[in-house]
Image 1 (cartoon, rainbow, N blue to C red):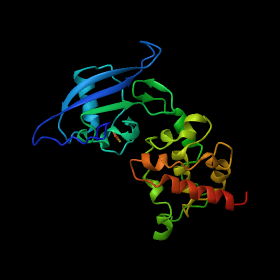
Image 2 (cartoon, protein in one colour):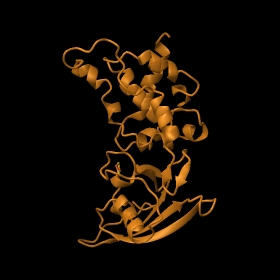
Image 3 (cartoon, rainbow, N blue to C red):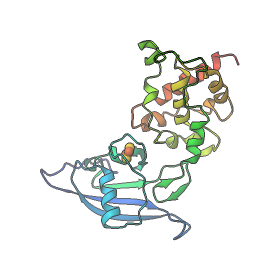
Image 4 (cartoon, helix red, strand yellow):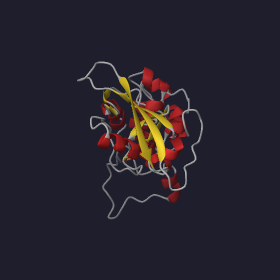
Length: 247
Ligand code: FES
């Protein structure tokens, strides 16, 4: 879909013209961000990441972006695409042609072009103890749980830490202390795991002023998640768990 909402139908076997407008930033060149426009010819089913590669490899090698798997798994190419957070490797050229605007994720310091500093994001994530805590001696084989118990947190296991949810949250933009949706999603993944023993500790952390009650239920996070995780629902479940637990 174009910025104007016009879907461009590809010509059979033909390439499509795509105008790529990118918000650039390089503190070694100038203190303020600027915009650059690039014209590329791409196959309709190429990904937007392919178009960015084309720009970087053939037009401007100074363009900085993160990517790795190119298949929606590693979570490293989250960016603001026509005003919405998405993974560049999951957006097709035909969905955005003839014109696309690309910016770095909001709410995190921009280091260069489309690369943001992920440290504040991962600080919130690691504060949630994102690993199984169980002090009992391990059984001879794996720690068993029922399919129903596994289902309880299945959705939140899908997170790839791309930061698309957290950086689409207006509370996160304005409050540097809020841990953000992705941290809560990863807390949820362990809080509701029947094998884990640190739920109270996580809920105590999330009851703090920087925790789960900062959420104002705007649903931006759910719309932004490229994995389809029901982020707002998970946050609501964690809110209820905080309210009904005794510390
Ligand atoms: S490059 Fe890995 S998710 Fe897009």
